[in-house]
Image (cartoon, rainbow, N blue to C red; front, top):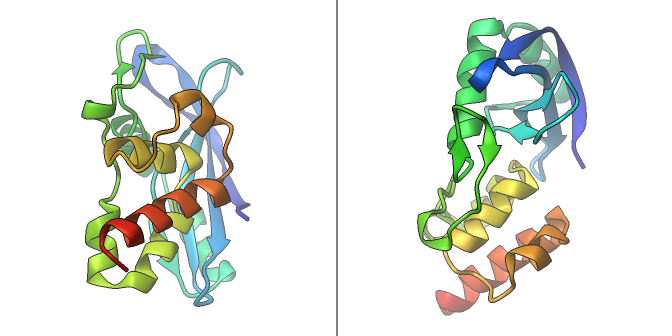
Length: 173
């Protein structure tokens, strides 16, 4: 389960002049370290909430909090761009999400490559991702026959289970 670690006191400007509030979230990994990522939500209250992939791994929560307090507006602006780049079909001029196409999904990681590198890392890598990133991975690598609507109903645990089981199955594990 993730925790809100820090909230930036200002806003960051995104496409079409939209303002976003910024928060650093984190969660404890199985090995005791803490993964951290940034979440952006519209200051006006309308529109999608965006999230980066893991931005840092720190030895403990206190160090993650310290890392978060050292970030500045320039870092947040770059992180917002990374979060936008991870979303398929963003109309940057009007900032509206277009329908995702399975063939063009932009996954933030290749689950097969991670698993082949070190099987235990896949779980940690998936833990650090927002559920939207997990859905994108599932679509990009055709890891399920489920429709987009049914994937939207699944939580992080179920999405991770689909990825892990399918990767192991396809690799003959």
